[in-house]
Image (cartoon, rainbow, N blue to C red; front, side, top):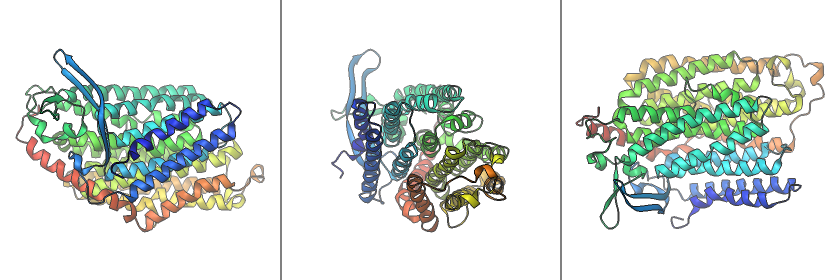
Length: 534
């Protein structure tokens, strides 16, 4: 498998599907839907194959031999340039224990989102073509080991998401789409500027022994490059590393979204179709935390150490603020959107701990939140399709009319609360264990536990108002789940229960890589401590 380009197949299979869809006549609605379902289904199979051949013992940050299923070839090369000399950009793919978990999450959620798109009727051809383009962009982010290639996939995601919200969304879809686009584009500009600065601060040795500036992420992390006197080099007394770190962090934080950059998320969720809300919360938010963990932390380890308390503080703000905002919502979908803001705060808190337990919990929380929140948005979509309202107070007693549906709701709600035996519990426990072990953020961690109480408050209160009590007369004709809705909810429920009972199924993949990044950060900080960085 190491010699088979399975990552390229995984990434670009949706592009093949997109081309086939664009070639089909407009009236082939069923063919378009089934073709998309087959494409995303094959991706799930490919992700499982990758898991089957994955080596648990390998886990590294800047060592190419620690990455698996590596594909590397020269993509762009321009020689003879003044000052720069040569520009070299590689098509460089590879995965470790962190990215493999997110690949699995992406393929599962995308497949479920395809089923959630089954009732789309407007411009079906354009919808599924953009849907598959988005699929390619998301997967490309999680497997790129060249910063330029990473950035290409990061930017590629903007276009399809903008149109999927702006064309197929709700009444205020144009406003939500523009707000999403502008916020994310602002973050992308910050990332671009830092990427260019880093390019001139690290070198890579070619086969002929010559050295060139590079976008190679592994080279950018390598302590051997600390002797390069670039504009973002630790050895440059006038360097801008601190500013670059802040700019890069903000670029990724907007996508999380971290307070105060969170305001685009509720609007985007409320106006987006159900399937796009599933992808937005299930996958796109994780791109922000993944970028911080994959790029910001190991390239700027000494600044990460200095600012760990502030990262934990913003995690705490996300947890508490998101929970309080969710409790105040009257719109069911907006409540779930703010719950995502709160739960992504746990990821930030775990990452701020810089410990094995905390970062393991953060990565596991990325996966678990992706599955749980996908199920929650499907739950909202199911009831909205039948009633055409998301007003929480408009319901009541739905458990009497839709008992099976309510059973799935209970699983998702209690998993979001963090009930033991369901997947949300173990990831939050690991985050708190790791964060509490770091004296620097221990007080923040203690305060953050209020998020558990507040989370239970808004979820149970919503459950009571929507599903318990007396059924209103106008909802007595509602039907329970359809076959397609079973196909969406059953797999997600199984994953939530299995990971709640036996989390080692997923933890075994990430443990070596998490250990490696914690060790790398500690060692790199020792190296940096003897260098003037400001």
